[in-house]
Image (cartoon, rainbow, N blue to C red; front, side):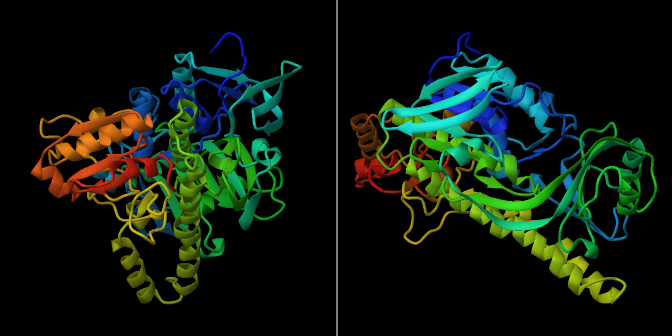
Length: 530
């Protein structure tokens, strides 16, 4: 942390995982930032734990993979998967769920599971090593104003009022984002559901009861009384730490509601437990209309707020900042096209719309529809047949979760493509999609071979194409690397002869033959021709 907080190119409101991730990503590009964090201590509420392999790639990019692994209270060998049961947790009906390991071959890193406060501690440690980042704790933002010259953020800290100036401000300050509201960005509620309870408790007796489900860390009980909403239990550690989300009656409080009996009914037997936290929240899904108002941006829950169904929240927020970071750096470095910053909303907004439609809302409707149609009490044979079909179905919540920018204005894909979060994992290189790993001819790691800016993967030894792109990059001032990997195996795996990879490991263009207008391709990818 810098000793004196002065102005910086970027001001970030919010020092949670999303804000700290943005600061780290910018710092590794040489961009200074000020992070204003309202709190002074880490929250001890376990959330944001179910992290994807793509999020593991962010950790790898930030140089914290080993630190995250060391901070993980559930060892990888235990397992990181889930289970769905019917009626109660100790049910006769169950099937495996959220097997993230099924998509591991398509990423350059492992998935992780750790409480958000552990992750924040790791991120703060990384920030402390980066002189480009000033982290100010106990700073409550009170104002955001902007003009053609820049943006000014007012905040109060240590009883005094302060103002800092920057080229850009980014609100990573959660679902009740001050930055979003006073920055002139409209937020809309798409879905409102029941009052929810969050219980954090300790119980080794429950740990022992669930040894019948080895390697499982998350448990979802489908119950007809829940109207499709989740009763969701998760491990915090292997020493009896748990969290639990479930709908409760309106007006329920810690004093007037029997949460011991509530948990016992959920599990199906009585067991000893000790509460560490009882809290409440209102289930809603909301989405900002845009992620940008000129020099003010938002990311994470400030853009999209939803119940903790599927672990999409923090993963989506961290992808927001990986998308935004290289674009802000490009503008500050002078090689961005006029449309590059607008592509942040154009790419990320439809991704969450799809997360909501194709995953979160779909899962609620799926549970609701199943429990309304089938029950063992009404027709046991029909229920067991339908349950078996679910158990044998593809784990679509994992296998089809594939955020992509196929319809992006800065991606050279097929006409009519649409960006979203649903897709099919495959190794074939497709514009707008994440680059999947392949072994290099020399046995090296492709991740380490990619450049920090744009990378042209030349799989055919096409010197004319490589030279054309390199010349175009020099003319446009774009940081660029040519990676010559003449390999029939790679051409077959990726289905093309050349791949243009962006700084965030998404694919901007694929091709096979020389003769492309390389300058036009690259100009499109940096927002000059949208």
